[in-house]
Length: 250
Image (cartoon, rainbow, N blue to C red):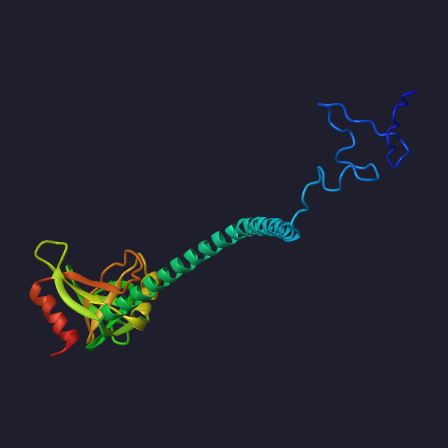
């Protein structure tokens, strides 16, 4: 009688199955019937599509904000010189307005302080003197007789001006001790006429005549353009006050 070894049962591939050695892993464990690893073994779970979409949107928003910040920075750099020029222009305009206001205020104050012209009771005539001849003026001579230290003299005259109104007239102390002058302030047309006359007669003598009487005949040192006339003639205070009364009237 023979003992025949029992055949191992073949697997589906036709190969005999051998029992796994104790303590060793089965090499076919985890394989599918087709011999491939399991479909879920070692594979990561798929990503959430909504989370990916949110991530893309956040990244796009960040890029957009960065571009906006860059454009804003460039705009601020461009606008800075414009604002500087605008501020400078505004400062110039303000200074111009202030200067104009000061000028107008000064003009108004000067106009307010200037007194109204007062008509003279007797006009003050001012004539350029051509020459002075000893003795009284003969009849028909264009001149006027006045008194000098040596006696009467004829002051031959040419065309002059007549001052008919003043803004001020007063008696003041003369340069020579014990003498007095008459200070007169002119305005308007009389001021301009007197300025032209003194320009033409600088260095020469002029005669001041009131009611056909020679008051004084001073020498013009320089043109008088400010309208401030000082009638000098070694007047006493009484003489100066008499002249003022004659010009101003009662």
